[in-house]
Length: 162
Image (cartoon, rainbow, N blue to C red; front, side, top):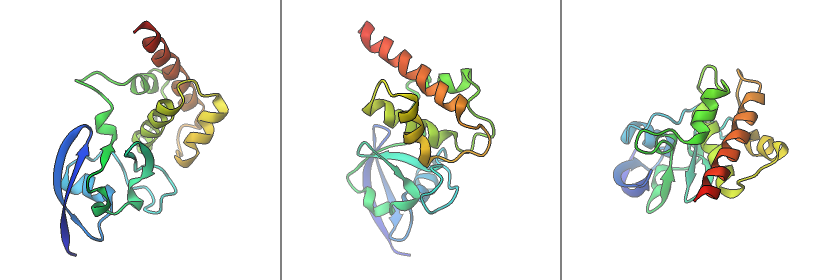
């Protein structure tokens, strides 16, 4: 497999890596950059375990080829906590026990963050619709939805206090 030099901004930091022309962005993030939070569950874009944002758009990184990241802005689960402080979504997932085995958790968190960046006050239906691309075999989703609702309320309070 031939490789190309890829320059991108990942979690706010400029990076360069050699990406294979047939290598998924998921594999490049994990293998070339050591960002192993995103998981490969299906390899076909059906499970959401590999969710990231690419230029602000939620995508399954298993469906994006590594060279397509050239010049792009990528956010992964590793970029959610800032200076060791968990994002309110991460904190609420813990408080609500909205995770069990944890395999799907990074994708759910990235997807939920993308939702709240677009809509800071989503309804339960909107949350369920937005997270429908993320499969979880353990939680039943109710705790996940409650965690997102509470994180949204917390983020709105923080914004109002500014």
